[in-house]
Image 1 (spheres, rainbow, N blue to C red):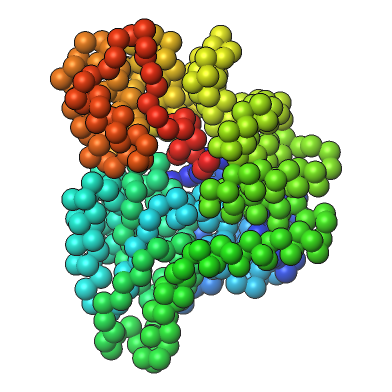
Image 2 (image 1 turned 180 degrees about the horizontal axis):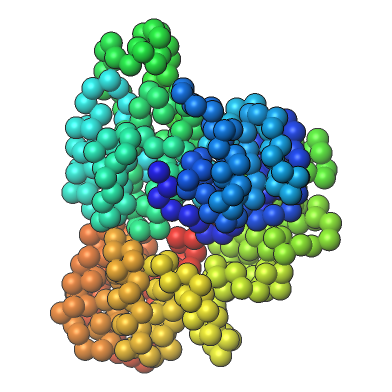
Length: 469
């Protein structure tokens, strides 16, 4: 099952080889990976195919089929090199590699959502529905991955298995974040734990229902079955894991002064823990270790720019965003973040609107990007255009409190006061950030001030809330 194709960007194959520690690599590594597939029938042009060893078949049998369908690279445990123009990466454990690649490709979405994992022989589905309903009742939009169905915001997908393969798990978590979910509840089967489908996934809470004699055809003994279940709980305690990971990455940077990957990973880790000044320093180290700049290096400048912006160093952030666009002029996420912040700061307005329109043309399915364009129109006084775009944004991400708040503001400015209060009420029901909540509550009570004041809601730009920043 493949639910989706892309994360926020493509990924360089060279970067993947630094993540998965291959035994050997052959063929061209300077190619972009557009998607990940473990089923050759789901391969599209530019995909990476990971050949898994199954109980009844070896995925290496389907490498030729994957290449015919457009795969530009193959990962497998086999030493078979099908064609010299196709990269082949040999690994010790293809399932582990698939999980590692999937986490990186979707920018570790489990670090951006509070995730509950439920395991046990019986009762997983009932418990997952109870957790989901409690969280929704508390005003926390919640996604679901389980035996009966998958829920991404309001979108419902019939389930094909209790816990899907690693790319599908990471894709769904990424989509939950993008649709405004604050929590996710996942049924985690013993098969999934044993097969590393959730390896690298950051669970905040683990639930164990019970253990009875079942699945012994697969696990062979109750001891093996129990050991598989305990994997979920060994993954809890992210704060301690972050500290250990930071120490390891700093040691790797010290051991190898040319190691760009460790510095980049440290930047990502510190950004996820909101140490934005530290993240900017780590990205600076990675940039200093680069040789001649390549187009794909835009990512380092973009992420450092986000870190600078969050650390309230806008001149440095702006410089990095412009450098990222110099390296890769059409990157929609850079266009969106830079232009949106310009609008917030009332700077370069003649450039900002065309940049946002270009970003929307490239990513019309991204609610936060469409919202950026709508909110720019609002800030510039184009209220009717703001309503049109913000309505589209809310349809794409209906549970995002910021988008609902923005639409409420636009409705108020065009005289649709009843609808404005309805949107503000919706925004509050989806648990906005603490600094935004009193602002919305005041608007519900008093409406917006006159247009000459036109204050923006509190909080950082939408461009930085849903795009991996």
